[in-house]
Length: 188
Image (tube, rainbow, N blue to C red; front, side, top):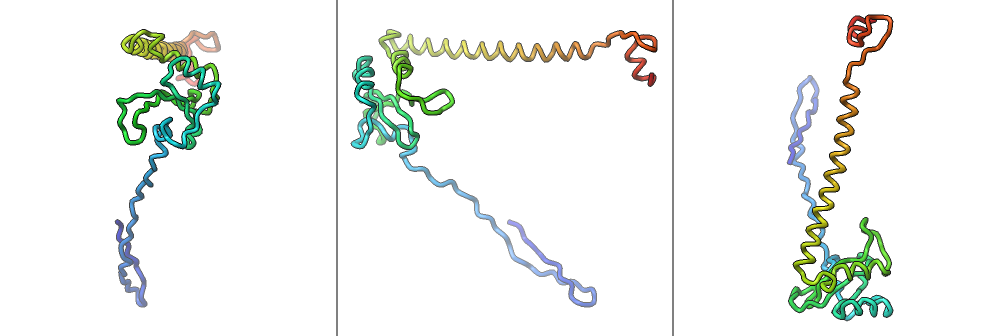
């Protein structure tokens, strides 16, 4: 809140302070989003669910019969779901979303063999158990972390080498005694 006052000159050089009142600015509240903006809202158990084309669903079901692929109309992405009776949330009771089908940058990706490869890669049949799958995920995270560290250290090392070479005083043969320092400070 800010209080504003106005100085007005009234004849003879006198000034009168007039109160203009208090200015208030309401705090903007974010508009609440509906449940349809949740990735879990459009699940295979809904009566209006739009399933993937039947040939693709058959390929997914060949990997695991409890999987489904459903279209999310708000985000306009396909989502891969698995039936899970332990999920009791009111939005998607009995279903667990595995992943939305999209490129790493978040853009639309069509249903193709890459989606099937991702489904198979996350399948317990490939890894034998959830513990082995989790160990693979941890190894992948560590590999990516080490790769990022190596890249950063390489860039930092290159910058340090460039700076070190730049800071070296090199003897040049010129009109003075050959010292860049004395040439610079002596004005020569």
